Amino acid sequence: MTALAYLGPPGTFAETAARLVGGDDELVAYSDVPDVLRAVSEGDTPRGVVPIENTLEGSVTVTLDALAFDVDLLIQAELELPVHFVIATRPDIALPDVKVVRSHEIALASCRRWLSRTIPAAERVAMTSTAKAAEVVADSSEPEAAIVNPLAAERYGLTVHAKGIGDHDGNVTRFVVVGHELVAPTGWDKTSIVAFIAENRPGSLLRLLEIFAERELNLTKIESRPTKKELGEYCFFVDVEGHVADERVGDALTAVKRTHRDVKLLGSYRRSGARRTDEGVRIASDDAGYRDAATWVADLRARIARS
Image: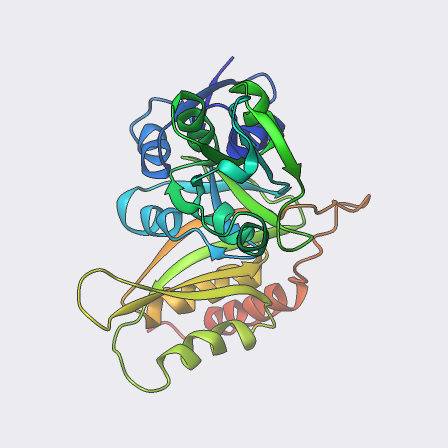
């Protein structure tokens, strides 16, 4: 049995994700995302599970920034988890009496309309996780509520007053599994990088995008974040279909590395929800033409006269 770190305390959506990917692994809860990543980076656990994106609120920036600037870890897998919220209190608290609602900031934002319609006067307080909100509410003597998943409400002995309180159907959080190894291609993969622009001038982003367009590589995500070094200086997070082992992806990363100040590989890993074909054909790449072109150039170079 090995250990798998996740964003705790027990009862979070991250725990649910960790149970789905961890198998028989021992689950170890940490208080925030940087602590999870630090535990893996320093060898306390071989792998960790953290949220990286939500359909309603976008990227989890603390995860992106930590992966880019604080640790040298690689994404090894991803999991898309449907998110269903409930609101719960201690058994002796009635919902209309609630003065404070606690939850993770994404959960609060996801239930904004329901809260405004049902208990509009209640103060909304962001917590490090939905389960932490449940823990605090369970221990509080004040009329407070927590927006959590059903697992957390049950675990902390809370009474559920309403289910499915999210403002939108189809709310999904994407979690990633991080570790130290670069995993092998599966045939349905994604590669994530951070590219640092060499010079802030017109067309810099266009030149980055053209590298992938010229190789007919599909980008599934591109997002800018401050480099934290200088005001107005940004780096770009890019997700591209395919694995670094694929000819086209490898060729594109070579071009990015050559033309940009720096590039950091965040991982090449199996895309969530994908299915490998029976023939084991890599759906994301057709590399025969690139291998033929490389062979042609190699043959030309072999013909150079040696003096």
